[in-house]
Image (cartoon, rainbow, N blue to C red; front, side, top):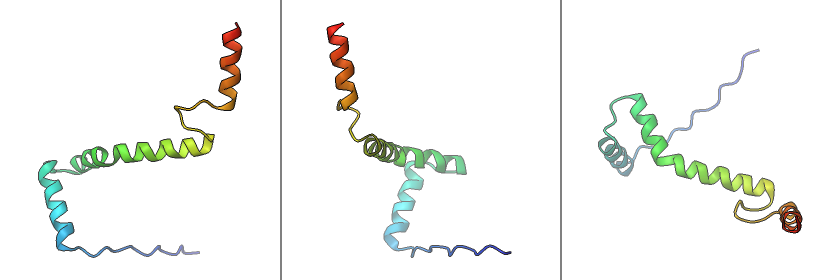
Amino acid sequence: MAREKKPIHRVQMTEGKRSIIHQLLEEYDIQSAEDIQDALKDLLGGTIREMMEAEMDEHLGYEKSELSDSDDAVTAASAKG
């Protein structure tokens, strides 16, 4: 059985997009695929980290700066200690 090919999402290249790409090529002195990877890490690293932290907060039900219900019990027990 042959797999169906996913359609390729094509984005129209506008003059504004060309300008942004040109600025990025100059700013990061992109000469190779490795340079592109480094630029993307720099540009998106913080955003990806924030997204992952938000996902973890949602999964746990509280933010990392907040105490969970189980943390209250541990803190109270250690204070009596």
